[in-house]
Length: 193
Image 1 (cartoon, rainbow, N blue to C red):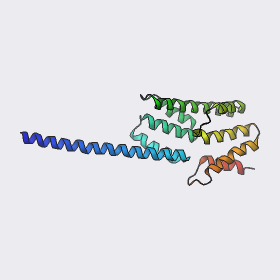
Image 2: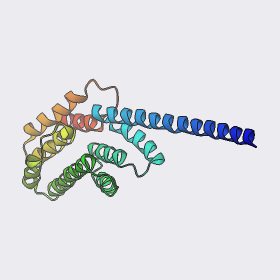
Image 3: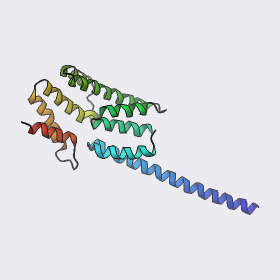
Image 4: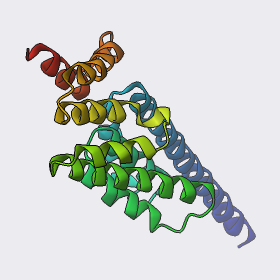
């Protein structure tokens, strides 16, 4: 009886050890994929980043950090409404502290861009520009800021200033080894003369 108990305990130990290895290797895989998606996003390859985030969120749909980074990447890919939805979902998770503050900040930026875009589309480019001017000049919004300032200046009839912003986008992505929607749009705008 004691021998059988010891064998059962050894088997249970090995099962737990194998499960721990599987779980930990999954965490390592998730962490590596998350880092790769983050790196793609930082480089401006938003499409590649979004694909990885979507795969990660299939496995961990309520992971606040993944939702935050996915929402931010959606924003940077100019998918504003979807970004707001995802960031609201991230905010509803139980995380607190620095992550929650970051989610709220990202959500404020997304909402401001939506409001400014609505002003721009509604024929009030001055109001849109005021909102963009008030936003933090963070490098994190660089591509979006360039694009929307170019659109504002186009709406104001200042083609020369708009072209300066479009050119900055072209310069940023000229050497990229991926297709950037920002680059494509800026190139089309500059070549439309």
